[in-house]
Image (cartoon, helix red, strand yellow):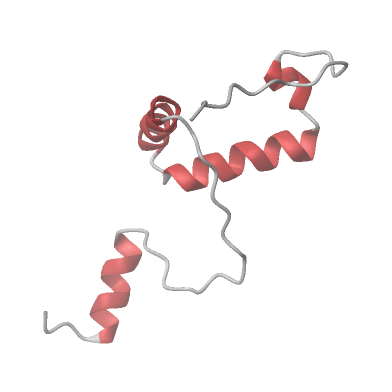
Length: 86
């Protein structure tokens, strides 16, 4: 493209693309497409990446102990996950 490194840095900054390497290990979570689409749509309205929204949601739930409130439970029974049958 013929850009200088400075120009590339500025352009990435304008597009909110981080050039810093992260020292964290990435984890992958499998979600139904419809849930991912809802998260993506909400992230777009907030002006953040879907991964940022999901990370902030999970950090807040863990930090504030909101598991029961989010899962609409009383903490006495396990949450059952409907796993697909192959």
